[in-house]
Image 1: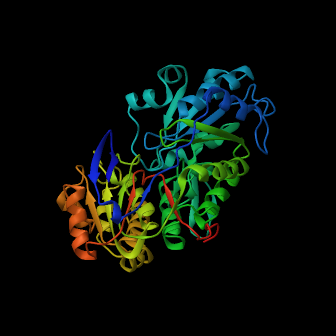
Image 2: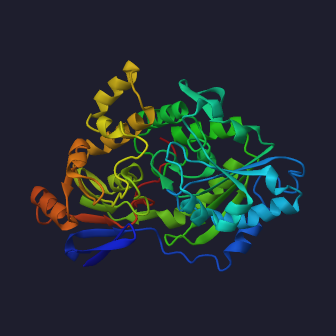
Image 3: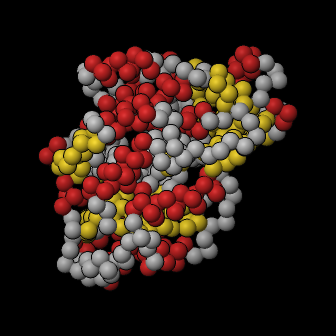
Amino acid sequence: MLVKLPYGASEIELDLKSDRVLGLIRPSEITPAADPASVVERALATPLGGPTIDELAPRGKTVAIAVDDVTRTTPTHLLLSKLLPALRKAGVRRDQITIFIALGTHRHMTESEIKEKYGPTVVEEYTFVNHDFDDQSELTYMEDLAGDVPVWINTEFLKSDLRIVTGNIIPHFNAGWAAGAKILLPGLAGEETVGRMHVHSALTTPNGLGIDDNPTRQLIDAFGESVKIHMLINSVITRHKEIIDVYAGHFRMAHRRGIAHAKSVYRVPIQGLADITVSSSYPCDLEYWQGLKGLFSADLATKVGGGIVAVTPCPEGVAVMHPKWIEYLQYDTEELKEMYQSGTIEDYVALGLALNVAHVREKHPVCIVSHGISDKAAEKMRFQKYDRVEDALEALTRRYGSDSTINVLTHGGEVYPHLINQKPKNVP
């Protein structure tokens, strides 16, 4: 059985024995919208549970639009191509609109990346701002949530008269499903807010992939209520990055409606849990900070004690903005919890994600195939490094036997494996 795994801009071909393969798990093949532009226009004209742009009466008001960054597959250029003219038609001047790149704690996007993702004409005509999570002078404190999560948010975004958010709905291991108010938390939040949120997530729901209303999503929605989002615009796309539908309106109502649709694409039924799961992190593969997403989908497709082969190119290495992460990844969950309680942590975001990874790693031995992760880095992460997927599979087959079963995730960065006859989780 010949299987092709996406690997960055290329593919890896894998020849497997058919009788060992339980399932080839990937997002469903769905027909995209014939006219994506009209889909965006319709969503803006008929928002769910919220006002239209005209009803927001934007004339004379400043408008802030939050967009996600290069690590996301949101077709932002298509959303902006209809949103910006609608604002202009309603009386907003170009100089009253600011587009905030919701980086969370990611690196700044380059000029070429900005033009490619949002469109060169839009970049020339409108002001774009790379969010600075670690510049306290550009952040405003609002309140504490969940006991120990202080809400710090981008001041200029908060000061705008109208606040609009965008995003794309796919499964997410912290929030259950991406998009919604997540573009604000962690997208436009301060460093401590993002860090405490990630630790809170790891401690309450270590792998919340596909869980609609988990503690992290509740925290994110509370944050959205505090900031007050005036309109949300979220897309649902195919695995080929084409628009299927767009949902606009009240940030919670429109997002939940979009999740229901996204499940038809990304919640994939599986026949059973495998002894070994091969998971390409595609399309999340710029660095392992994103590539780890393939680990959490693999967790849901693998028997406890079974092995995972994480396949991810990571041309930018382990984590550009979080050098402490690789240090934290050397510890187990209990050690990390003790470090958190000690209050001596330098990077709470990295600690939170280290807790998530340690949770999966303690259930499954992990092999990694990556040209961007060195042998030394893999050892520090407590992964076994291999140059080829076949070599990793051979090693795990020796461990589990020649008749051990295999699941293959071609799009591990965005798929939600769902065991048949198991009721979908909606609560932690």
